[in-house]
Length: 437
Image (cartoon, rainbow, N blue to C red):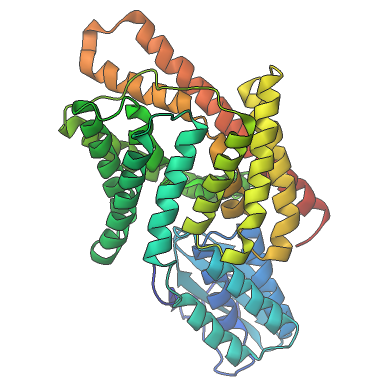
């Protein structure tokens, strides 16, 4: 977790009133909106707010102080240019959008609103942004509990039934959460934390198989890892690509992909260290709709908690996620394909969340992903991962059907993920097209 405000460097931009060889000079006047805008937009971009709302916040702040702002978000920097009667100036904030903190986004949006309405002076706004930047993450107890509850809830959705399955999953997820917090203090590298937590999940799942503690190895090993999936970064990347911000969108997707690779590497390494392997066909069973919906709501609350959502807002994504999961369950019972069912459910979530986020002042990607996390095609991902491990083990003696099974499971998982992504962002793109902000 990044602490303090992102570092800022001055730079001249083409079209400013300063020579191209000299840095832009920031006026020390209290009414100069440049420092205020750079701090607000940096906080929003860093903590998973959408690019569009980040740019809108910067424009609103500058307009409230009688200036015009142009915001250029990139992966590792945020450039803000301010134009007014006295000329132009610009700054570059060094910030990479790797965090997800819904509380910080909420507080930042509130300060932006207050300054824009004239209820808060710019100097008070800057002090408020400094305070928000220094806010700690959710408490360790809530973080560990959310990881354990979320992993167990996902196991219920995906068919866990053994009495020993849930204690093992809860222990693995809780231990991984503790390790993540410890690693964040020692090695603040974004890849080490998910790798370490996935390694713990692989070790626990592998030991459960070796000592025959439980037969549901796939669920014990993978459910804690699903709590690490960087879904908000995937969604923000899709939205940026849809808005033709190709460089930023590709960078977000690349970051999410690298995190997924770190999770996969940690999981497979943990399994191999104890001589275990992921079964090709994980256990599954049909569960009643009421139990399915309750488990989905618990999983949603866990992800929203991990993303630092304030307690008072938790019921909202829980209800939305439970309704979406129930809708998908009903469509599957009627014979609808998995991709179509996921698309329709995500259309519902995307539409509701798009209407709610301006009022709740919450990041769209984090809120919507938390609501649909139970729709992730886990069974197909399990089978694809198990097939890849088996393919690497047998080498040239591979059975001809194994490669086709890997491709089939991978294609199914990809189609469902694409359906989910388009279902979530289409309502937002349509609403934003006809309504600014």
